[in-house]
Length: 448
Image 1 (cartoon, rainbow, N blue to C red):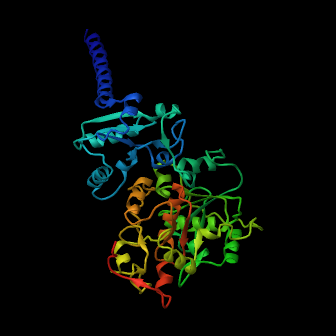
Image 2 (cartoon, rainbow, N blue to C red):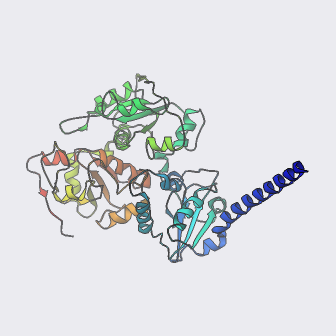
Image 3 (cartoon, one colour):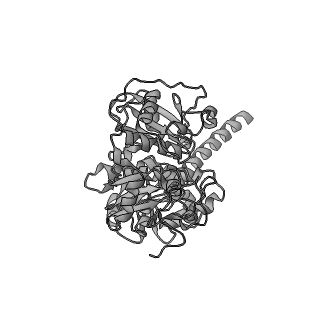
């Protein structure tokens, strides 16, 4: 009898437990309302609504991830990626709420969160909900992408910044989106012959590039064209090689990327978010050292894209063309107004007379104004908005500079991803300008 009662209680408990689980799941799903496609379409221009892409940055930029028919984001949508909630930074919650506020994602709005995997939107919804947001809607962007009449936006050259899964597919011998076949080389880029970052763990098959292979002091300009060609040959790079670059911090990778494009490599990619993007996906690292595999011919006369990187005389020409051109300073505000040079090896303070401030971060190792909290590219609308305040517009000839070319190279790459066409890197930057006698220099806040 006791055994029978025990069996009955066990069954009843199990049913109750399963029912409770089902109810909890149902409650979780019903906590946030789903918005229909037609309702979303009708409210795209409604100022009481804010449409938010919660997928990884690459999907927002243009990549077709998680089975969507069309890449990119819903026209007018801003971004707040679910993986930002997991980024390990100090005062994370307050920083995320500040980011949301700056993007117009505020509790008074009807906040529509969309994804393509059924997870990202819920993650962001839970974060916002616990912080006082109660008008939250969920949407599956695959439905929107299936209807060709509904507007989606992709950056013209989104393929220049790649997601980790794209690199993984290359390694696995697949043919991911925008890859046309041919030889592939993956490089970890950082300073020094022996890279601590590389030795601690790198993407399988990656080879280390020391930035000294492409530039030298004291100006830290790029090497001569013939020496750059030797660099390419030594690393097995030809004009037809698909080159993938990354770093623990990707600034050095962008520096090399800009130089390779200048030289004439047709397909150069940078891993968006650097090594942390690879690790976030749970992909393996290796620690064995991979050797360079030299080739005999680059396959083109260097430089193919001569105007992608300019020098002092062209920088002067841009400054003289006050209506149609901008020499854009990608340094901190303190560097721009001359409070600091930003470098222990650059004595001069100030800026080239007539240069406009293009934003950066708070120090030479930081580009926070152009990066999301996970170090991916900030969305183009936000970049163009703060540029517009300084007269930096896509219709003009834009040349970017910083101290020695690293920060500016990253911003040049982002401008290229956006599809801005008449762009270049002023390679010598402030280091060259401040060390060249007779050149006009300004300090202090400019009159605008």
